[in-house]
Amino acid sequence: MTNETPPDLLTVSRLATPIGTALIVSDEAEVLRAFNWTDYEAAVRGWLAKRYAASRVVDGGTPAGLAEAFERYFAGDAQALNAVRWRAVGTPFQLQIWTLLTAIPPGETISYGELARRAGRPTASRASGAANGRNPLALVVPCHRVIGASGALTGYAGGMARKEWLLKHERAAVLARLAA
Image (cartoon, rainbow, N blue to C red; front, side):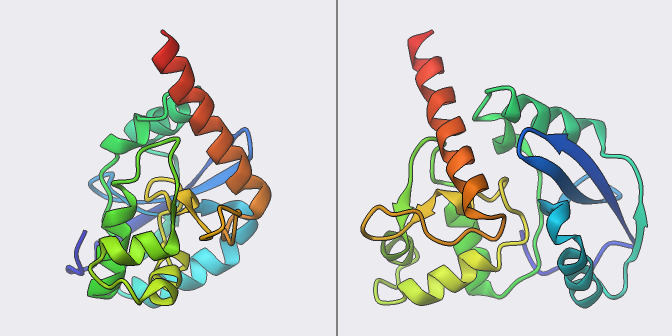
């Protein structure tokens, strides 16, 4: 989760999900480098060209381990993405925010202000919101779990309908697990 030497090769793959086709970018070690929806493929490819200019980008299949984790998540295992290995390119503050996002349990939400507080910068809710919005690993780094101070659903790069679906899906999965 640091700004290290870029990988030689990145593979862009697609995976059908209940809320659209996912765009998955992984490196040679099958580490996730980006996740978004094919609706935003042009933006993802532009981001890759900027952040990973030295890497060769090819289309290919989704690595089996990543495909399995996403399939388990969408089948109702809200914890399945916790084991996905990922690396991101960002500023130290962005990396801190993205790491903090992974500590929000499935089925729970926090506000942008709470995210800033957890980062040790209680007056930086806008900056934490901006870092949240630049998250290149939607879903795995669960930026959808951040909501407005009023409890209202606010901004999600994948679209508000997806954010609402993901939060309902995770809550249902958590409740089912507790009931079992």
